[in-house]
Every structure is written in C-alpha cells, then in structure tokens.
Image (cartoon, rainbow, N blue to C red; front, side, top):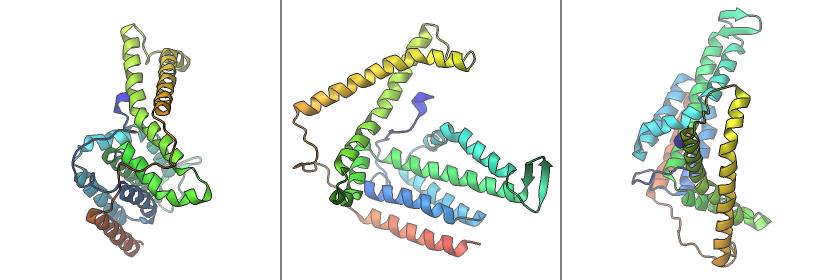
Amino acid sequence: MLDKMLLGRYINIDSWIHRLDPRTKLVASFYFILIIFLANNWITYGLLALLVALAIGLTNINVIYFLRGVKPLIWLILFTVIFQVFFTPGEIVYFKWGIFQVTQEGLVNGAFIFMRLVLIIFMSTILTLSTSPLALTDGIEHLFRPFAKIGMPVHELALMLSIALRYVPTLMDEAQTIMNAQRSRGVDFEEGNLMTRLKAMVPILIPLFVSAFNRAEEMATAMEARGYRGSEGRTKYRQLHYGWRDGVVFVVLALVTITLWWLRT
C-alpha cells in the first residue's frame, strides 16, 4: 500500500503538460475545483470528464497511476456516495426503511458526487505527477509573493512545503523497507484484532521516527554549513516564464466556464 501512494511522486518525462509553468498548473487545478460545482447535469459532468481525459492524455502518463490516486480514498468516496443516496429526499421512491430511503434524486446526486470527487482527485494527481516538488514550491512562492508585503514569511513556508514534499516518498519507501524486514522476521500486520494490528505497527513507527529526526538534523547541519540565510539577498537559479501553452490553458478554462454556464439547467 505504501509503495503505491502518489503524494510527492513526480514522473519525469517530456509531455505537453510537463512543459507548462507550475503557476499555471496550480491556478488551473484550483480553478477546476471551483468550476466543477457549476456542473449540475450529465452533459456538464461529461464536459468536465472530457477535459480531464484530455489533460491525462497530454501528460503521456499511464492511466494506472491516476487510478492509484483514487484507490486510497475509495472508501471515503463510497461513504459519501452512500450517505447521499440514503438521505436525499425525492418524489420517486424506490426503497424505504425507517430513516433510510432510496430515491431517484438520491441516486442521481450520488452519481454526481462520485464523478465530482473522482475528477478532483484526477486533476490533483495530474498536478503532482507532472510537476516536480521544487517547481511546485517555486510556483506557490511566486503566487503568494504579494502577501510578503504584509509580513507573511512566504519563502520560509515554501521551503517547508518543498522539504515535506521531497521527503514524503522517501519516508514511504523507508517505511515499506522496514515492514518487509519485519515480515521476514515473522511479523504479520494483517492478522488479529485492531489492537493487535496497532501493536504490530510499533516496530515500524519507532525506527521510522528515528530515521526522520536524523534526516532533519543532517539537513539542518548541511544548510547551516552552506551559509543558508533564507530569502534575504538570494537569487533564483530556476526562473519561471509563461509561454504560449499557458495562454492556451487559460483560454480553454474560460471557454469551459462559459459552456458550463450555458449548459446548466
């Protein structure tokens, strides 16, 4: 399970989406989450699904990776859908038992909720898989730079985010290595009740925390030895530039927004 987590993962290939400015991908991802709430019928959701499918195709990344992004959250999605199905009132009732009822409106709303959550996860996965942690951090820092004038430590926040994203895959891989080592010694993480499974996790958490603290101390020593002084007087090695592809993305998003307004019922 841990080796399939996509948080912080980046697939370094050459594609149309990879060449976009990270600021464009950040703005487009958050804007997509906003406009998806404009969809309220099958046609509008189909339009958004077509947009996401096009974006996935332009990444040149196997669709299996995007399905992996949904898998860890499938139980939360199903719980939300089931709650929507059983507690949505409607005129056409198919089943009723106590406070639970299945209506035509509930089934439709459940399907819409399912599509909405899956499309949001797909778009978020596109952002993380096609943007390196350093580029993502630079994009966030540039977007929030105006807030530095009111005292917000933008550079420090971006640095912490960069370090966190950089080491999440490393810690996940190390946790998987520790679990494999414990399994080779006869530890079973899937048998027993809840308390037994929690106790079995202790031999994993302790060495993992020790390793994380050691890595943090080594990084702090290395940064201090290299004279790191934060954002003061620092120049950027990686310069961000908008290109024609970024303009195409904003135009497409504008056209999709207008179409969604027109197709709303």
